[in-house]
Length: 607
Image (cartoon, rainbow, N blue to C red; front, side, top):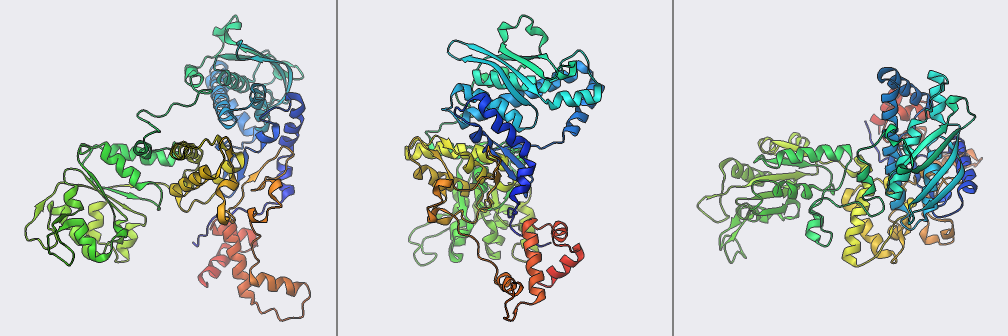
């Protein structure tokens, strides 16, 4: 199957606006209800990004799920029928509590200077954006210094109540469990103290709308009847005061900060667990992954958490060595062994004795060098260039490759026996494209590091920049992201939030597919603000049409000139464009242009 780099499709504006019409209306209507403070409804809406070719929806840089209301109701029905009403209520309340608390954390991080009323109002607005409910405030009082909080509001068109009535009918119980949990978690995390919301009226009781009241926990007389959350203190301790760094983290130490492995995505955690399992052993480890994914960082972790940590960690990038110096660099050389060898010099194997030797890009070594490494591993001894006696070495080898060594073996470029000697415990490190959930966390990590290094005060990132980087191809992986954030720190003024214009220098991101965003008016976001339109150097140039397309357009427009483009060329162009839009999926590409999969495959073979 032919694969092509993923590209964002041209989605018609009217299609997106139809899909998002309800969410847009709710956000606009809510502006008058909740006021126009900071953050505003527009700023909240612009935190949403759609990346259909990646199968992702992002809110505040976190992945979200678009689910049918009926599916939500069916899950709820199964839980109620299987566990009983009270247990199901507890599960939904706790789930909502955690969702609200985490969202409050993201809102507070995004707008640390936001006014408290608007930061609280962001919760109901985002709840509406998610399609759960339409919120109408009745009464709202907040004074953090005095510990005052009281909120009362109507919930119109509650999805949770609607689905409960559909499956269980009306009754005497209030049923918006997840939403009350969400409101409690959001307010509690934002205020740093326990706030409890309760429904006093519910559509499931026959009322036209649900009515909720929220106030500090100690002001409820029968708090014990509410589902408590044992992890509440975790959120309260840091939502407004910053998240504590991992043990041993010291941002002032450049060496320490480079040793931190940041990430919590499933793909990265799986690789990390393999690393933790093998680190205390003596096994040879083979690290694979694209350039820039952090193989050296993994090697450093292996050494620090092994029994050899008191010994040296010696690193060598094999691709950086000229062929005639490889053997001397690996095994050392005696004085006079070759021109310029004016003294005896130990090689990397010898210098790593008692410790760890990390050989990066090992696939770039010649077959001759590979055979000598194999002998060193098997015999535990080396000979310096120009020497005549063996030297015993005790080295743990960690090798890395950014190509598939098995393919290199089949192509005759890598020794099969060395491959099996290295492939004792292989760990594949995922590309940044396969762990996009980690991008916001990595951005924050690099922002702290480079603000420290360059003595700058950059206050964060705009929603547009976060959404753009979440959908960026990242051919250079973490190394590319690291460089972009450092560039942005240098380009930003103190007290300013980093935006796309700070990192898109010299047209670097001109061809970047733009994520589909949502404004408060329901329009699609663009990569550059409207006020920058007059600056031609800041705007990406439109892509030129393929010559065959230009000739075909002229022909179809009535030009008398000869077409000079064959039907086969046009077909191949259509196939290429379809594959480009479907990220190399042949079946989807065939459906897009009205061909069968066999027809597309036939044209691919003829390329």
